[in-house]
Length: 220
Image (cartoon, rainbow, N blue to C red; front, side, top):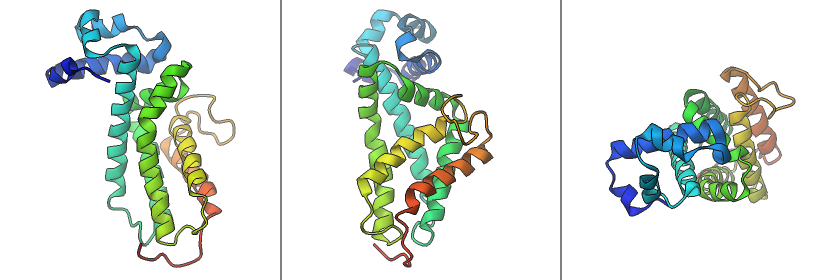
């Protein structure tokens, strides 16, 4: 976690450190990222950096958690005006579109997602996932709970398994168009957002389809 010294820094200085660190971690990954490079680009000494964060892992987790919160805020904003009560599955599709499009429009966050999901350092990966899973679980869990409550999804839906499957899907569909080798079947690598969102809708409906009810949605 950031130290109290970090919290007292002017926002402009914190932003300079974050931007330098996001660039270095995003391009090189956790293991290869250089704290010396981060400090040079941010215009601070290495000693100062360690006054802000106890170690490299804390800095990395802080950046990933911040990116996760920013992404969550964007997805919550995108979902606010969707017609969940009258068109649940259409709303799911539109939210999936927003998720995929976000990573076309925000390359810095896309690179942080790459670092968070493809990192080969087990201890760093465990800490990162602990930091971001709260956002995934609350947002995706809430979406599935709503579907069950209004009768769009069956009452016997395997809720936890479905949430877990969607959480595994989301990084894959977000990164597949931008990272070669993640997708062997659906033509995601190098694809435009029109194709990627079409694939995203196809995949999410495969997961949800087995739990669809034929009843009219009801008030929760």
